[in-house]
Image (cartoon, rainbow, N blue to C red; front, top):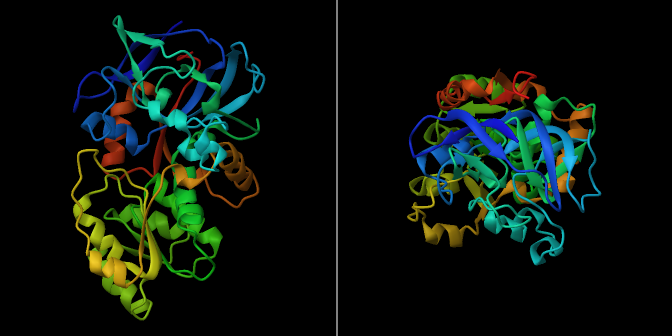
Length: 375
C-alpha cells in the first residue's frame, strides 16, 4: 500500500515527509495502523550520522503505538483490533541470548540497522523507487507499518496511545537503567545526568526503588524544574556544580548509582561521571555515543582502587515483552507518571519543528499524533 513517511536522504539534512510504499504482511508479520510515535533523541542520531544505518533513505521512528489491522500467516498472538506497542528491539524468545534471560539482547537485533525484514530478508519499503532502511526495522514515522511479530507487544485497550508509545523505548530504557542495570536499592543516593524522556524515566525508577537523595543534572532550567516535580530532591546545571554539592550532602561518599542519559555520550566526559560515583558504586551508561567515538577519559587506577563499576545498558537491561505491560500497569495504578512526560503533540509534517524543540530543551518528550487525515 502507499502511505507517507518521514525520510532522511543524507546526513545533516531535514526530515522529508513524502510518499512511501510498504508491503503486505508475509509469514510472522503484522500490519499496524499507527496512532502515535515518540520523538526520541536516537532518531536525531540518524541525522547526524551518530547511528549509521545500512544506507539511504532512512525511515525514522522507533517509538510507537497503534492498532493491528492485518496479520500474516503464522501469527496467532495478535488479531485485528488489538492495541499494541512497538518494541525497538525484537525479542524472539528462542535464540541463545533470549534463552539466557537477555531478551533485550535478542540475536535478531544484529539486523536492526541493515533494513532487511526479519521475516524474509527483503527490503519491504520503497520511496522514489529505492529501498528504504527503517529505523530498528520499525519506522514509526509513518501512519502504517508492517513489522515482524517479535517487535510487537499487546497492551490493554484502555491505555491512551499518547502515553503507550513512550514505553516502546524511552521510559522502559530509563526505568530499567535505574532498577535493573543500576540495581538501585532503598536508601541509595542517585545522580541522573540528563533529564529528557529517558532521564525522567530513570528518575521515576529511582523514586520507586526507594532512593534517598536524587540529584538531577541538566543544563536546561525548565528540565531541572520538571525533574523536581517528578521526584528529584536536588537539581544542578552541570556536573561540576553537582560534584561539590553532592560531596557536601553525602559527606564525601558521593552517589551509589549514577545514571547517564544525556542526548549524546562523549568519551571525554566518562571520568567526570565516574567521579560522581561512590566507592563500590555503579555508573550506568544509557546514553548513546557515536560509533566513531573510541577514545575515553578514565582514571583506571581510581576505577580499580575504589572498586567502581562502569555498566553499559540497552533497553534498560530487561525483557521488553514483560517490562512494557508491567510499566503500563504501573501507570494505570498511579505509580508511574507518563501523562506529564508528554510535553507537546505534533503532526508528522511538523517533525522538524518537533526535533528543534527537543534540541533546544523545550520537551521532555514530543510525540507525533496520527489522525484520519493520515490514514
